[in-house]
Every structure is written in structure tokens, then in C-alpha cells.
Image (tube, rainbow, N blue to C red):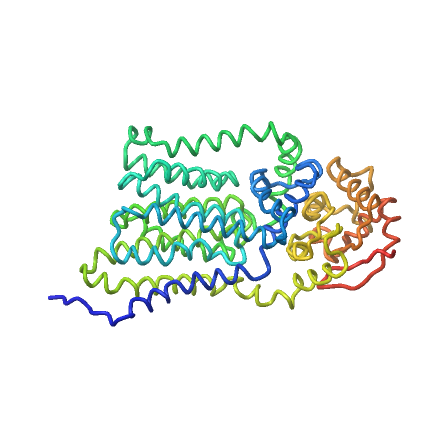
Length: 514
């Protein structure tokens, strides 16, 4: 006969503190610099848009408009309050995490949970929302974050009791916005709503306002793009379709054996059979299907970048946690499950911490920030161009961002980086000079060439930063971004007013001579 285990006074509280420690660890790391480079770059575009530049006309980027619209809030906070840029965007991101945690906790009220599942979810839901570390704030991470309360909502809709209509509508609205950030993300709600349809039947699904609310958000967003952002469809989409997908990453098939993607695939193969089995519980099943959708999204983008793959990790870990906790409640007698729940929750949270840290960038990027290029560039830019415009000619967003963010400087380039040159020069011109003459350029290349020269000449910024390496494989090391633009008379004349002030890890630093 099983005898209930007796906990010493305070024993459960110690385990609960241990279970929440991983969440606190990630929370501290994301508060430390640097913020994510893409988050910083998107915020910079939103600030420039708020200041009067036209999105997709003066500011050209392949991202759909929703992420820039959402970033108007931190951009406004940075402009109209004493908050610095990094503080403003982090406040908004942590506010979103708190909102999603609150939604998840509210959805759990009245839901049938065993003691282990209750303890594990209490410890790990906030952990899952902040475990992205250095990638916190990326669009993929935002999508994975909103997927967590959405999966809880789906489980409530299938298993009952029915969630309060106001709560269900709020979760559906937030989830719809998160999934609308990129078209690939819509695979996740498609799979989960298919499960709800299968489990509940067509009649119940038709009466449910959740899928209709989400569909209305997506339809409204899609209809708004040609009305408010016609240049995106007319100019940016053809450019992105033409070459953006081919200039970065491993490719559609090689990405499957890339290191970051391979680790995520191993987690997926472990999580799926555990989470999708009939006895795993509806929450684990919805999270398992969300993991499948996250994998499909990462594969379709075929880059293999850490933040593309991170939703597989977040949602795969969530699926394993939900399935494991549900199994433990069924396998253990009631009293034993209750006594073991705090320790099992701590083990689960620590397991997630070890899995994420073992090969990730957090906390190592934070610890090395001030001694490496991002911190050094931020310090130099802050000294020589704080709060002022800067021209940076680099093929990469990192480490220019977030260095510009911490210097409160902003780029005058019409794109976030000179990545279009990588598309224009997939094939290098023959001859000793690896650049096309102006009359040989296509319309898009000439437009960039002309706009950069005109902007530089019209208002020469206090500093110019030029990367030594253009990252254009077809031309080897012969392609020099500074020499490329200096062929324009306006650019060359303005460049004469600058002197070389130093170099930081391949980034040449020039100061204007007053």
C-alpha cells in the first residue's frame, strides 16, 4: 500500500523557488545588453517612419508592414518620453510577455489539471515566454509566444469548460496578430483548428467565434496592405521574390542537415510521438501540432538561422512538458503526485534551462558585449555621433545594430544594410573591376546607387562606417563597398571631407572633418 510522502516544512517552497529560477535567469539576461539586432533594426525603421520618412518608399525592407506598425509604440515611447530606444522596446516586449502570461494563467482557471501538470505549467509557462534570450523580440519568437496561450485556449475549447467569451476573443486577437507577422506562421493555427474541427465536429467549430475572429483579423490586414502600403506590393515584393530568398542561408535541402536545424529536428522527432499519442492530453497535442507548424515555417524560409528555428525549441519543449506532466499525474497515485509535483516542476524547468544554454548564445553574448564589436561600435558611435544620423555601408545587420541603438544614432541608408548588392552581384562581372557601370545597372540597383550618393552628399553625417568585407562570394574579396559607391561623383566629393579614424573588427570608421 502506497503511503503519502510527507514534506518537511518549507520543502515545497524551496522546490518552487528552484523551479522559477530558470525563468529569472532568462529574464535577467534579456534585460542586459545587447538587444537583438533585428529588433533594433526594425525599431530604427519605425523611428524614421514616425519622423516622416515613407515606409517602402524612403525605407525599403522585405518584411511585411505589420511588424513596423507594432514598433510604432516603442518608437513613440523613445521619441516622446525619457526612455532610451532599448528601454522602450524592452518595456513593450516584457509587457507583451506579461500579458500572455496573464492570459495563460486565466485560461488555466477552471481547467482540469493534476498536481504535477499544475506545478509544471506554473513554473514553465513564464519560462517559455522569455527563454529566447538573445533572440527575444524576433518575429518568430513573438509568434511562438502568442502560440502558448492560443494552444491553451484550443485545449479549453476542445475539453471544456468553455472559456469566457471576452478572454477567448482577446487571446484570439493577440494570436491572430502574432501569426500574421509572416505568411508561414499561418500553418500553426491551420493545424490546430483542424484538430479542433476533428475533435469537436463541424457544427461546434462553425459556432465558435475564435477562428472567425482570427480570420477577420487576417482578412482586414491583407486588405489594408494595398490601401496603405501600395509600394510594398508594387516594388518590394517583386524585389524580394526575385533574389532575396537565394542570397542567404543553406538552401531548402541543405538546411535540413545544418547544425541548428538538425538539433531542432531531433527535438521534434522526440516530442511528436510523445505529444501526439492519444493519452498525452489535448494541450500536449495542440503544442505538438504547433511544433510541426514551426518546423514547416523554418524549412520554408530555408535559412537555418537561430531565430527561425527557435519556435521549434520553444513549442517542442512545451509539448514535452505538457505531455510528461499529464503522464505523471496519471501514473502516480494522487498523494504521491502532489508531494512530487514541486520537485518535478523544478526538474522540468532546469531541464529546459540546460537544453537552451548548452549551445545557445545566451548568456555568452551578453557577457561578451562590451569587449566585442557591438559594444565597441556602440561606444565609438556614442562618442562621435550620439543622437545623430550615420551612414553605415555593411552587408550585415549585426553588429551595426544594436550599436546604433545604444548610441541613439540612426542610419541614413534607405535599407537596413546593403544586402541588395548581394542579390545584384550573384554573378560577378568579368574584368578587373567587379562593379557594373551606371549604364549597365538594372533599375533597382541604380536607384540604390543614386539614392545613397544623394543622401550622403545632401547632408554628410558626422561619421561613416564601411565594412571591409562585402560578403559577395561571386566576387571573392575584390568587392569593396566604399569603392563601389565612391564611383558616383556626388559620393566621391562628399567622401573627400572624411578621414579614417580607426577600425573595429573589419568596420572602417571615418569622421567628417569640420
